[in-house]
Length: 414
Image (cartoon, rainbow, N blue to C red):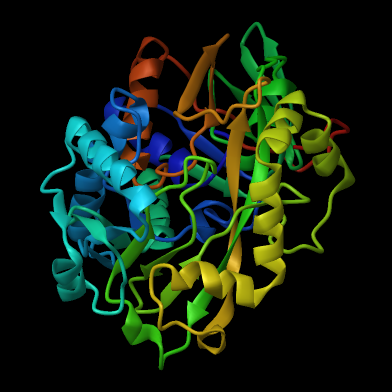
């Protein structure tokens, strides 16, 4: 396994649970697991409302919401099925709100209810809107704790999780796969690439050349100061803008009670860049030189410029939030960090709108698994384990040799 985020560890867990005696080693380049997308997301258990009917996202999010709630309950992890409201604040949004309700019903999202202004105010007294949807199956969870629990279960089943080990090269040999790492060579019978923000690069190390490219989009958050946090009881979302490929800024209550507002969406200047000053020439060139990003930027340049302005201006950010909660003020907001979304783009400029798992020459590459990836992590892991079913039978492979102390190999960095 390459990658120790929530999906990599959920996959490792599915493998050790499904195949008795399987030898699983997870290689994670950071000093601990779950340091990037897993540790910087909004903490929401998504219901499956937004996704195209019949898609893997729709199927796995609806199932995953129940799986995640059950997992958190079983392992005493902080969580709550708190529900959310999706609010139409303009007449032009009402048809889209109705379409969203139909999509959710088609996906099997339970108990969606349309609200008028009075019913909305009963749930969220400070929210303003013409109509809204109440989605009670949405929840919140402590995903870093979920990830650490996945790790503990993998290790208890005999799996190995190695942190501080960066994969720098991959090659096929007669005996399987030779993995070059910063800690020395590793031999494996098969490989699953859950590299997140680096997944397409890991695939290319193996000689696979996907037509898509991962482009990093940073989402920035504010937290509401304690005196303003009471304006939001649970989760308040806007109706998605069809001219913008993300959900828009919204309010989220976390399991510790803090209320966050955001995220916006701006191009990250480094794949793991959480601030404007985090810049990588290689990563930036990878984004700007890709025809898919160029087409996307031309299509959404006005919206993109607005997102950059909102990143720079607390007042502009506040104005967007006031569409949902008019009482919120700029002085109520304090910076609260950022996350980077690994969004795959096709060469035609379209965002890959579903999970994308590719099996290629003894490897499985997870090339697109942004939101609702955390919600669906158990299901994604089980799907990968099913894909790997032809590979693994008890005792088929010897336990891979762990990295040996050796100078770092000279190979492309992931």
